[in-house]
Amino acid sequence: METLAGSLQTSRVRSLAGRPQPQAGEEGPPARSPAVLVHQGNARNALLIAADLARRGVRVELAADSPWAAARFSRYVRAFHRVHSLARHPEAFVEAVCRICRTRRLDLFLPSFHEVFLLAPFRDLLQEHTRYPFAGAELIRRVDDKMCIGEIARSAGLRVPRSERIAPERPILPPGFRFPVVYKPVVGAAARGFGIARDAAGLLRGLRATGNSSGWLVQEFVPGHLMVWDGIFWRGRVRASFQFEAVRTRPATGGASVLRRSLRIPSLDEQAARLLEAAGYEGFCTLDFIEGPEPEQYWFIDFNPRFGSSLHAALSAGVSFPYLLLRLALGWPVEAPPYACGLESVSLEGHFRRILAWRPGGPSPLRLIGDLLQCGLKLRQAEELAAGALPFLLTPLCELVRRAKRA
Image (cartoon, rainbow, N blue to C red):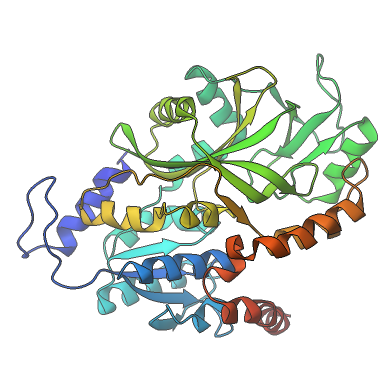
């Protein structure tokens, strides 16, 4: 299997053939400013990526399947390209992206969220026309299967909660399991279908509430704090990482983080390196850990080979994974950026959705409303305002128009 590093290197040689090349480890002055095509798979992430790269001197262009793409209205986007829907017409989408990158001389194509799973089968084709810094189909399938990556993590010496597949029509716990338990799709992302069941009736309700074709697994519930590791693993070592604690989540009983606080735990870098080496994975990914009740006890619970919904936490701390991936793709040196511990990042939308996603057994609705009001004191850390107020204000309108047109 061709590694991501080798694939990017091949793409670099193809696209820069005939130009003088800097020596290994030496950054040569570029003939022009680098240029990146960003896909709006997620409006918030696309806005954040565009703003961060543009502030670093990168020309940013945007691709989306609708003219009502919120990131199109960002002052940091230099050009907009309307393309086919990736979900409905993947071949036509990839063909359009290849043509745009080739004719516009774009150095990198960056998906902004979950679309890496749909693009994985086309990685080699994309590499013929630009650089694409995410994994191919075989590797994506391996790390996205929660049972498979759990076994790999266990073989690498990481603590992994016991997990078992169950049938959704007969959600009976295997012997030895006790409530509460965590349930999630065997293959899935973005916290969809995730939940905590405290009894058999709650488990049945949770499984029926979310359609899923990949099957379900139940996992031992480990009480503790959610720790998230974002990083780039490249040629046998961690090139850059950023870690944070999920102070608040959506829903409040567990899920995607909406208030994050940066931290640094050296042992998480070591565990991530062991896991990624065992999985044969190179590039950017997000790993989720639970800090157990005992000191220095961390349980690996999830793997996401994409930019997550918490990308702003790293960007606001000065760790730009989109820019670091661009430097790697161009063959430029990459140094791990330092960052301070205790920096906070807030999602206003996430706090609002916490209220809508209230469930029995979690914080009271009044407490959730109080948390949302408290975010008014943290507007400087809000991800929705980091890329400019206008695109943020236009995002709900654009989404309503897009949905109306699809309907």
